[in-house]
Length: 455
Ligand SMILES: Cc1cc2nc3c(=O)[nH]c(=O)nc-3n(C[C@H](O)[C@H](O)[C@H](O)COP(=O)(O)OP(=O)(O)OC[C@H]3O[C@@H](n4cnc5c(N)ncnc54)[C@H](O)[C@@H]3O)c2cc1C
Image (cartoon, rainbow, N blue to C red; front, top):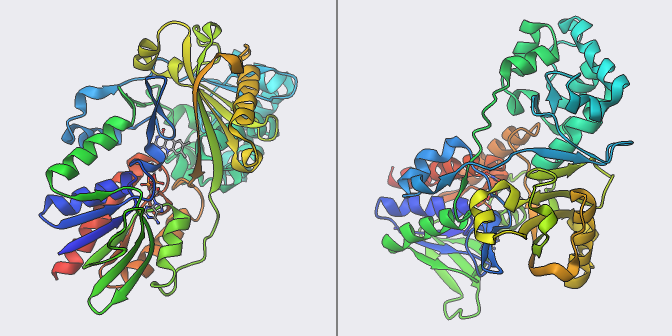
């Protein structure tokens, strides 16, 4: 049995490993010249810089230990997030007592600074309203607006959902994003009481010393041990059923064998590529319910001693529409191991934009824009002349599971795909964004495919 896995992101690598572990022959096709997809790391000025994912959750601990990465786990130096673009406030730290940006104490210094006195009192109305006047509300925007007012929604919740989930609060399903919050609201009688009941002081966020390359390399090494063939710069252009086999056509520089046959195919690309490959062979494939936002991320290694004292914590998110950048991540503030390697005065920052804003910019223009926005957001000069190295990359921000309708839409796609013999699909567009969702989903999809071939 020979299985083709299309896509060398974490989903594809995990699916390939799952198949190879039980002795199945596997070939992985990756369109770009590097494995990892949205979890790729690039080397800049001698430093490993994560261009997409940089954080993990405890849900992945067992898998990481299995890969020999238990000792590589580390916790962030700081997780403090700031928000910029609040009218009348330059930039301020987000309160640390929130769930999805909803504050437990609207009168804390941090909340009051962002909400203003009027906004804080409006939020306090939540404590005076009967809990059942609105019933069980699944729409995060409606829940927050009704109970705590527009300022909590616009200034605390929306910047966070845009920065973290890449979407707007009206698309977030409260029950999926914050399980137990609605029940706690009924129990405690207020939204702030519910936040207090479900909030944990421990975020559980962790990273890998050395960056996500450690995970991608560990997966690639396991695949090599199991004699999996991994082909980079090998973009699959089509898959076609021919008798009992799949014909996989590849566009690759050294393609002597432009088409190859396989017993089964696992499509593990991002949504648009996956849909292009699946549409001709899967009937009833739903049209895309929503298109993932495209972002362009610019990583800079820069000499900026003023950043040594982490002026804006780990990350600064912006009120949607207030700045050209969506967010800026200060990686040498967040990860101690990276700061140590960078040394005093040298910093790694990552600035993200809507891709439509930067599409026409050449590299120098983009670096200038990124430095300009970083200067505003970090409140200190980030000089383009002090940039030692930079990297730009476009990534699609796949909706998380918590986006309303995502789970049902993914289930419909999966049913349609798995109705085709010896075909499977996995990846963030089906599991929901985030490595803790992607990895188990890929393992499960591979397992279902193998079983379907045995029986
Ligand atoms: C900016 C950003 C930050 C993030 N931060 C975090 C975080 O901190 N923690 C976390 O858990 N998650 C994070 N995520 C989400 C996480 O990175 C993704 O959910 C996950 O990496 C997606 O993996 P995947 O394998 O499904 O897809 P991808 O990583 O997109 O991989 C798909 C692969 O398929 C390849 N491909 C596409 N078309 C073809 C083709 N025709 N032939 C062959 N190959 C093809 C692509 O080149 C790509 O390598 C972040 C995402 C982004 C964008």
